[in-house]
Amino acid sequence: MDKDYSDIIDMPHHVSDKHLPMPIIERAGQFLSFAALRGHKEMLEETGRIVSEEKDN
Image (tube, rainbow, N blue to C red; front, top):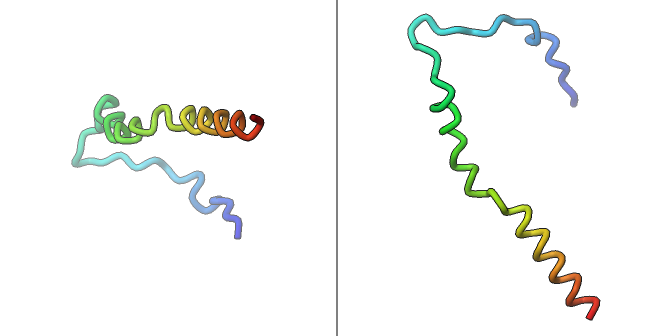
């Protein structure tokens, strides 16, 4: 079931009257935990390369 979001795509962006916008540096900090995965893809590729070499030998 595909949704095209046509019912909400043109709605105005909400801006709070009570809270100041979060500074960009703090907003970026919310995603810092994902940095733990940095290098994960490269590690998997290297493992795959090693396994392929072992199969070839």
